[in-house]
Picture 1 (cartoon, one colour):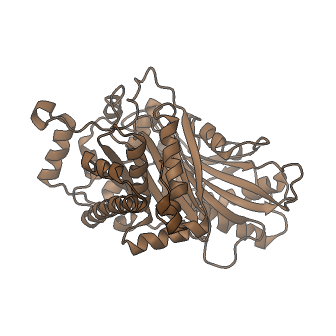
Picture 2 (tube, rainbow, N blue to C red):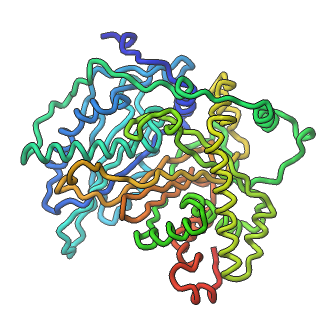
Picture 3 (cartoon, helix red, strand yellow):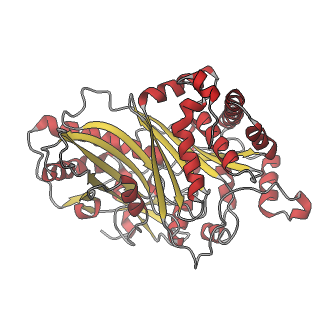
Length: 490
């Protein structure tokens, strides 16, 4: 079968943002990692053969796993069907070195480029924590990382994949004691169908006021619109010749009991957890960077509720919006001189963000940033213009929500899901850093901070990481009397 007959559909306008960045070598992958507790005696060979046995079902369930991008470096790129998938391309088991850190392995995986040509745009990398000498545990920790190209799925697609994987593991366990033998090369389904690109599913009407505002921001000279307050967004982007993609990853965990208190406090104040975490970022940066006069946050969100696409599908259907944090808001945070004033400033920013987020969701798809994409005629050229210039955002925050294991029947007996981690990797042309959240029902909240190496100082990342772990104290959820007596240092 020729490559031409394998073509499924053209790459859509949103998806071209990712093929363009791949062509420039400035964005590689998204990773959603599921951590399992498995019996210590479970051998790597059993894990490997079980996952091999799960892959055929995954290929049938998720068509994007059977695709590659034809003419990926051109404006005419298309999705094409792979006739076969070689397991050596999509499954690998490695052992974390003694004392090894998951974050370091994720950094390494994010910086690996995708092969050119008809190869899958995903792979599973299984990492096992080594047994510590003297450790009396009867369980072992197994990390299963789905590494995938953003062109075949958004963050929620990684969640959908891992739910499907759990179902496959359960099915294999129920059928026999030993997983079935699977050939090294698997044929993909003879006929697969991808979801339509987002522009064919949703109309994005733009008002003249919104369109003119965006055009003025992009093209108007400063003498017409005036100079905005200086935005803190880390160091400027490097030129394309200077750039070396190097991802950094910081992992943070908020324990389940603390998460429960944070959720209850958020509900009492009429805001979401994402709103609270966003306010925490602004609070930490305002105190860590006393000279900063403005921040800008980006918040992606799914369009599936409008397109009607199930959360169980692997697609890329996301948009986002910008939130401005001006100088007077940052000054108000800095002027808080006691615990109660700091508390008020955090909830005030959370309420500010929550109101803007609700307005964005209510008007969507009217005046949506995705609606501007038809005006981008050259996606590679669009990104090339950003090299060597100031960044346009301080941070980006994504929340994938709660991972609910499949409801039908018990989970696989030997695979105890313990945690989920979401990392989008370095974004040399994006925000200075990204914050990414997800949790498993009744388990800790996983937060990651990812950034391009050297874009922000380590002290800034330390301040943001500290605010997350210190939130229960800052919000006086543990011991209000003690919190009121303690000075907070971001």
